[in-house]
Image (cartoon, rainbow, N blue to C red):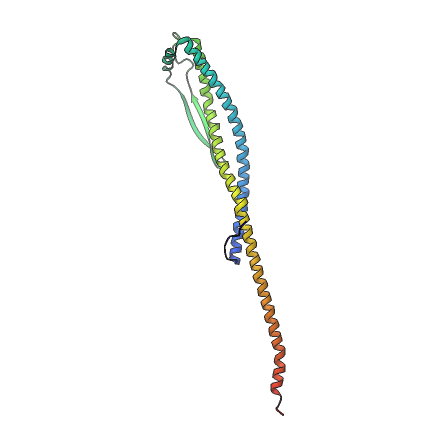
Amino acid sequence: MTAINIPPTRSNLLRMKQELRFAREGYEILDRKREVLTTELIQMAHNAQVVQEEVWNLVAEAYRALEQAQLTMGEDHVERASLAIHKTVDVNLKLRGVMGVPIPVIEASGGLPEMPYSLGDTKATLDEASAAFRKVLERVPELSELVTSVWRLAGELRKTLRRVNALQHIFIPDYEETVLFIKSALEEREREETFRLKWLKTKMAKADKKRPERDYAQTQPYV
């Protein structure tokens, strides 16, 4: 803790008290924000982990089904069948706020048709691969929403923690130390002023006691 280098005046004391009050209020607000962000981040991170594991399992299952389709139909045949797909998922992005942090809300619509290719020259393994990748595609928007939310909440939480720590360990102690320093300096100045006034009163009182004797001596006739 170090006192701020300012003159110890009453106006500066009032200003430092006001700054200290603002710093404490800001700390309380940021501390509540930190708690909300931490709670929200823990929940989001848990949900993201669960969905990510599910998506990775679906991706692994889809690629296993694709390998089987390539083995039974041939890689070129599977690639030609994939060219028949011309439709994808439409994504609508919205934002919602969590303690001032914009969190994405992804709404997906549309998607791949159930049978985008001809059934005459394909096998069931391709149908299984197509269905597996369709499941992956349905979960990707949800995973993207959760992962993006986690990153944004984590970034805001880091900034909030830095501000909370700065207020708690730097600004508030410095303001408190400055207020104590100014109070001590003003009290010391008042004690000195009180001592000086008492000294002047004592000196004037002594002077008043001597003055009548001197005046009386001056009024006596010479013998």
